[in-house]
Length: 206
Image (cartoon, rainbow, N blue to C red; front, side, top):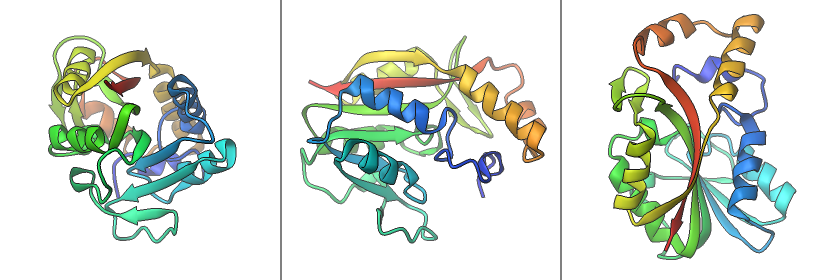
């Protein structure tokens, strides 16, 4: 169980700050449509896959490495070695996951590989809002500059970056009020001294 799992108990929000509303925001910025073929990486139970399939009417596949995931909407696999051909997708979603991936460079290169020219990567995650990046017990926290540099190194041009720290604050406040926030104090202590937040970023394959 990850440190953040208890925060989402019964939330129906896709296990990520901002929930499906933030996913919808990113999808609109990416201009995905019913004709888009999409891949949702780190899909979990496939909630985002089902949501976007119903909302857009698009073709979308999920991928997750957790062997406990038994959803027919989700293929088991690793983002570092995606089981699809080059240029297979118009868009890839990688939400609340890159900071947990041991070799982010390989993950982003694979996202680049399976994107068509002009395709877009929708990325959301934790980050540091001030100062350099930091390795913490919660995962690797890059700065905005670090995030954008990783994208460019993988061949993806950052075309949008938005701060959505408010979504993270709202999530934590709700968890504390509902009694599902056990471990939050430990998590906050783990990043003491780091001004951390949550972002949405879009990278385009040019």
